[in-house]
Amino acid sequence: MTSFFDVEEGSNKSLIGELFGDNKKRSKTTFDDLLSNISSNNDQEKSLAKGGITNQKQAFQSSDLNLSLPSQTRKNPINKDLLTGLERNAGTESSDTLDELFQTNKIKSNKSTKSVNFANALFNNSSSNVSNTIATNKPILNNNKSISSTQDINDEHVKMLEQTISLLKKEISSLKYDIRSTQDEAEEWKTMYEKLQKKYTKDINDLKESHEHQLEEINIEHKKELKHQIEVIEKEAQIKAIKETDNEHFNELKKQLEKAFFTIDTLKNELNFVTDSFKEYQENTRNIFKEQLELQQEQFGEEAKIRTTEKQDIEHLYRNLKIIYEEQKRLLQIERSRLEEDRRKLRTDIEHFKKTQLEILDKIENQKIELEKLKANFLTKQHDLLVRVMNERSYIEEENQKFQMQKSMDISRIRSEAEVLEKYAREIENARIFLEDARIKYEQKNQKLNEIEKILLTECVKLEKIKIKMNDNYEEDFNTLENLEDDYF
Image (cartoon, rainbow, N blue to C red; front, side, top):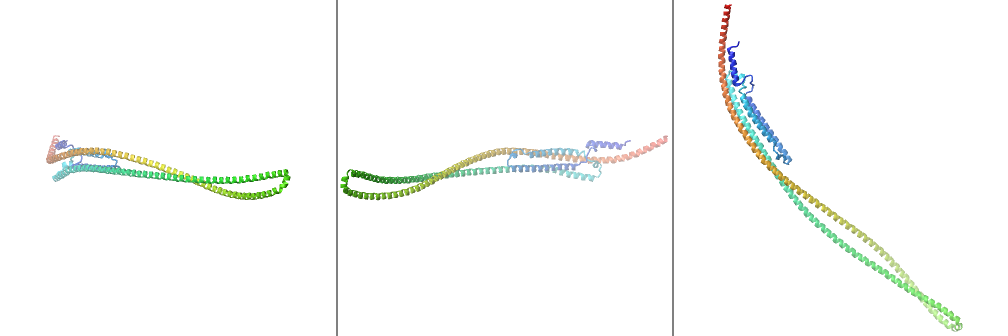
């Protein structure tokens, strides 16, 4: 059998369960656990913000190391992840705080309902008020910290953008300096090329003049050699003419001697004929003829002596002429050998001169080819450098345009992020106000619960008293019934 107290206790439990939830379904979480959850969420937000800042710093450092700016032209995924994490954390935080706030009415333990010590209740109320104030201040501080961290991130992003702008300006100035230096080098190369061209033209003119001068000297020497050879040939002709004249004189003398011998023979024949024919007359006239013959023989002897002396003189002259001829011939051979040697030297000199001339011309041609190559290489290098400068300029302009576009996009994104953060701040402020209202309502409900506990305690005391009375009455009734049964049976 169930007593009235049990029925009343079950009805009271059902009433309390309907008001504040079933005691069996309630967990042991309190408002302090709610504050710890909020602080843990804020710590998670701080860690996420710090992780986002470090990741963003690493990304900007890697972008500064690369110096190519393709990563800066893109959207920053770290900021997106950070903002999405903040949005999720803020949304989950607001939803969790509201859910946990409304669940705290259901998760009060049985110990608090059965406690009778009012001092402990007041102490718990004061501690709960202090923890509530701390909890209300913590999300505000954490929100301020998150806003300040996002502002620091934005400031760092702006600083990094300014640093990249300064780096780009430095690169542009360095490129301008390189272009100026290349232009100065081009001017120096032009002046050097003009100087070299002037020098080579001067050297070529000097070589031409020296070549012409050497040709003139060679022509003069050749003319002198020709004159000398003509003189030698004339001397040889004179010697031959003298020799021919001497031979003619000798032949004439020989002819005269032959004529004389012939005349002698004829005279002998005539004399023989005269002697034969005119023996008588010859005998008569022999003495006369003899005298005449003696005279003639004397004359002929004298003439023969004269002729022999002349012949000796002629032979001596011939020998002298022959010696002179041999001497002249030897001199002519020496002169010819000297001329041949001079000709050979002249030929060797001419060949050497031609070789040197060809070598000089080859050197000049090679130098011209090298100059052309250097000129072509210089022009190609200058053209490549100009093309590279133009490409770099166009690339810098494109990067500047991309940077400006990225800057405008970043500014618009930062503005949108600031608007979102302001929106989140307003939502957090509204949540704080809502939490304050919920706290007030919770305190009011807690006061009501305390009053209900007091009422329940008084009712429990009354019920105990009634139970005792009813037990006494029940025992009396039971005893009376037993007595009646005993009496009846």
